[in-house]
Image (cartoon, rainbow, N blue to C red; front, side, top):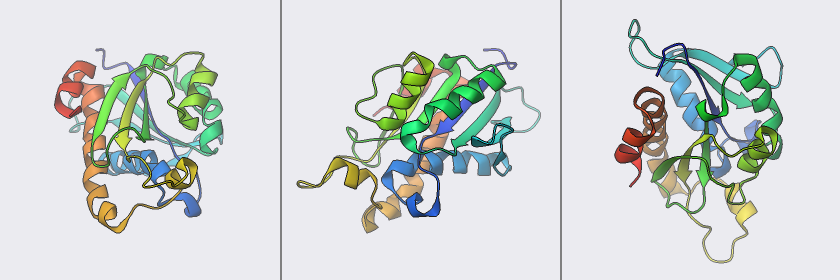
Length: 197
């Protein structure tokens, strides 16, 4: 992998304080953690359609690919347009895009990393696939589990974590951030061996 390659890591979520603690916004939490590790704040991209951080993973001075962290300013179901703008601006092929998102079909506290696939009813992935014309991008899927009882799925993803989950959430976010770094630095296969449980 060339250190000249640029990776685009997109945290999926909804903008605004009213959505900040929702399960649907775990992608934002993960890219926030990655930005903290890079030591850089998010700033407005020139397109005004997203906030970005540019940098590299790993210790300073060690060769590593350039990474752009991004949070679109649009709602989840319209994220594809802003992200496509970023892929064009930074000349990032879709196979070097990493979408970090919540996943209903994985238990809370676990995660999976994969390349390609469908959208499984996830509006953010659906919008990306529609804008890209392909599903061939990487996904870091942070488990949120299924809603309890008969709770509507939309209500569940747009609700806050339980008290018990909030205690565990920093560990999940930290692990997902580790998985993103591993994916960029070590490749998909090694990352799956480490993180897919």
